Length: 391
Length: 159
Image 1 (tube, one colour):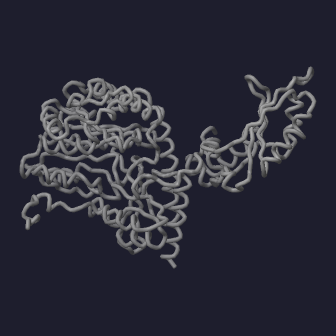
Image 2: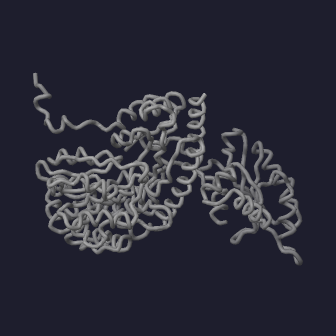
């Protein structure tokens, strides 16, 4: 009999499943759940994009593309980045099209990390960074961002964690789960710390289009001296409601992209061809669809923030992504207790904040990628729950 | 005001307070703007989007194309307004193209609608011909798909 424990990689075994998974199992076992836990848009991919994809299938365009992605698509991405963050990326050497932002994050780490290199990861944040750093031989080092700083990374916190072994900083803004955004002046302060050091920034900007409050999204790569030390990660999932198409990209310095391309080439070959064609249409023709979706999210955002504040769960106004992160400490429950009781007693699913890092304890992540009527129903159930808790 | 009207078009049951929050305005502003829209005749009423066939299995809705000879002094207006008086009539439009008036009628059964056409519409002076089309199945109504997509295909919880 084969002993799988001896077969499996020690490194893989050391990685834990995401805390979200346990919660998913509870939700999946129950009926009539109203979920506010989903991390993807409720909009379908704009019809123009779907039609374009269907057309390419009809024409039989089903072969591999260039490893780095179709030249035409990289050209469009380059134009898009110039337009949105005013940074020039050479489509031939500085952009790789990947299978979602996730793959771009993975190959970024693997391209730069040597055993023992430290990667700074602000938390609360998306669940993939630390495990991917570990698998790449690096050491994840957490920076706990604070509610009083609106969950932004401060230069002081950054300096505190930098050691001679620090190789990279993950900058996950607009942030999942908090909705925090780093504005230009805040990024300047971070850039001031990094500029004289050999530390790369992995700037995960997958929610960049979902930036609210008038000022546009700013990338750290557009700050003086930062383009050469930044890998920008972005993709089509959130902005164009294209999660299932699995298409993202990395843009960064050519010497790093060249090494990333090897990993991508051997591990993936190329991103799905049909998705690449769809993405070209998305960038060329669907900017107004994005605007429409963003303005819908913006209205829901106001509605849900107001709802939580009214029921006595203080909620700072998130400036990006499609999550709110209300504080539930006043209930005396832990995040896990709160979420479990809420799902059992009121059939509403939200995600405990500690799933995104220990410092998320005392908070819950609530997604507003749902229709207005869905949101209002869920809010009234949560209010009932809070009222009953308060007796 | 356009955003306000758009919001009400897709969900007229939002409270003024909710509308105010969503639009980043005060409740008083929203009240004032709604009143303005009503006074200006922009918003002329509020209604629910009802899945009629689900609500009443026998219910029948028909589109009737009318060819009409226009009258000298008032064109199509008088006939259109006369037709609009009937409570069975949901909508009346003057159309471009191969016929003149489009009339929507809802009845409790097929016979009722057919009789309405033959007894009430066809005899009106100036009505030259009628063509009745019955709705067999609804797929989308006022921007809402039928039957409303009840299953969110996304997984319940995702990172």
